[in-house]
Length: 220
Image (cartoon, rainbow, N blue to C red):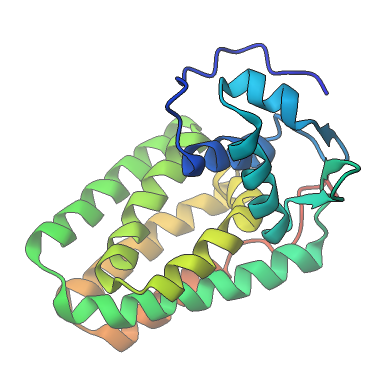
């Protein structure tokens, strides 16, 4: 397994969740490719941590379907198919629908300002072709509703299935179809401002459900 040449920029106090997020992002972004074997000792050396949080992270990644773990043998990056992405997309869309329904009645002005600013950043990143910045801004916008909903079961489901749809998000935000997301975000914010929880929930669902239900051509 080739170790990425870039400096990870973390210290030995890295928490378990941070290890999980670093490995998850490396898989989603393609640093570690489908079929590649992941060795906990090499990963621990790369991140500057012990093997224990790495092993725990790999188990969590297996639950998300991002790796295939065989205890005592090997762990490899899984190859997702269109069905995996479609199933995860539908679950994620339903969770964001629920988040909007629960959050809209209690949103305050500052929350709406955060969402508007996130969409401005999203539109700017889309225009410049910065897909990573698009993803961060999109997370910040939808994250307002998820945070306000304060539903731990919802958080757990999103934590498990959102990484699987990242490839579909990247595909959308790297294409002209990404412009539609700006308009969908604006409509979501308008409905949230109006306090229309049901309509906001519907547009939240549609926004996520509009993601491609397959892999890019070079991954299919």
